[in-house]
Length: 189
Ligand SMILES: C[S@@+](CC[C@H](N)C(=O)[O-])C[C@H]1O[C@@H](n2cnc3c(N)ncnc32)[C@H](O)[C@@H]1O
Image (cartoon, rainbow, N blue to C red; front, side):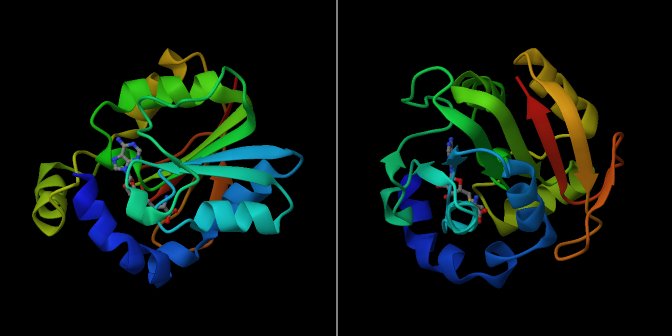
């Protein structure tokens, strides 16, 4: 599977939809105060870049070497010691993970203070089928209750949820989220 991703590397690096967005701004805001961060499934490296610009010391990881991550690894098997990073971030990638529960559990394990997750929400089987046809690496989006269960199952407590109606939209923050695209969760250990 990683060869598919290697071929997409340049597209992800230059993609405007991935390079910017209110969700990226929010991740940076939520990471402020941290000194170190891990960007899981870094893709074109946009989270890592923005966190570095904000002054954090960042390690990026991704299973596709072509993406140019600092460390080549799957989210399900993070080769880092417990509590290695103040913040662990993962943006618009979990819907590609083969074992999302293992990935969340690994992110919780290596986070010292906080895990930040952004992903699309499940919007029905028709939308899932359309996503899979458009992109065979798409496995599944999750509903908000599923996300809450995944995070809680890894011992994480939800601090804040933000919901964006569409890419590029300004985030509306609240403690309880609805089912829009995408959602960002800030959770603590
Ligand atoms: C949509 S891109 C990520 C976008 C990027 N995080 C950003 O903010 O622009 C999805 C990435 O997930 C990676 N990926 C796929 N399966 C993975 C897994 N099991 N663990 C970690 N990363 C994975 C791919 O190699 C790809 O780089």
